[in-house]
Image (cartoon, rainbow, N blue to C red):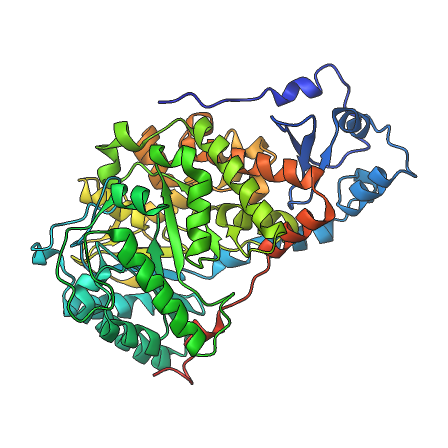
Length: 521
């Protein structure tokens, strides 16, 4: 395992007496690439100080007439002016999602897939493995269980394998979901993660008519994408893009085709467009500019610079695809700097990691990205329904099952499962406890505690414990590194850059995709 760099934050204050009558509760972290220190409080207010300013703050030596004193007072860092009610309200606002129940319901309609990816996390099956297709009975039972959620609305996400392989079940789930929405009064959204290689005009017409959001995968320019995502040559009669063996070209065709359809429907293209996921491999690290330029050329409006995960086939191909996380963070900084420069020249593109964290930092809101919250979303924010009827806390838990590890299994058969027994399962209770950052030894004292999250399935897989060990965790290293970059940028940014970063946090709901009962069908 690659060593994770650590920083001795405590050296900043060593030997200095803390005036307990002046500062309110705070955590702090020295930024590794800047002569500055981040301080945060329990409710997630923050400030970036120089080392001298930090020492003056903790010693109670700030000039009451200074702008820094005013800032720290407004952000609830001074004991004499501490507003408990405001702190409580802000903290409650950040965690409003915790009592709602699972909102995301991932349905793995098949393990079959027509592409072979070097890092496949889903443990895909060959195209003749029809026994890995979800049956109509399991599909119906999965929808019925999903609609028992206590969440006021829900999202059903189609995954695989490749969900277009089992399109009749996709259609069945959509239609049953719309009927259950009318029956229960709960709004529903549908989304599909697809490689697009099996798309055709008939399938697209159904997806568009039934308001199914479409997300695909793009790993970068054609040569890199096709190197990592192999698509066998096959006839493509009836489809708009000829399958000539290039996974990139067929995906690019359908991205543009779908985006054109949204425009033709009168939808705002800045909001309604195909999203594309990126998996960063070792081959990606030196090609960050080409990768970003590829996303721009395809009309994709956001890029998620995700590091590779250790699930599925990625475990076997680690010698080819893995890399030290310090190398990833250098890649992240370079790519995001470039994305910011494109924004300054008028190109609309945001980096998704940054947007998630900045929404928490700048707006004091949690966008409810389930992998980066405390506690995590496994079991309490999401459930995964496997093709064979098994129910898991998360898609990663389902991935572990495909490799023989049932640590995150909640129900063996969705047709007989009881909702309360699923969400109240001891495994769900355990993951909630293990992913509560206020109970983690390192996380409880980390300045980034208000904005961060841990992943129990990743901890279990890589560190042998759902609690994990933050100082050895690749997830922790990435989260800290991304937030270091963001706070360094916030501390030194000009007005234009600050405006861009604030714009990335703007939450514009895609109302077109929300199927409300009175309009469903």
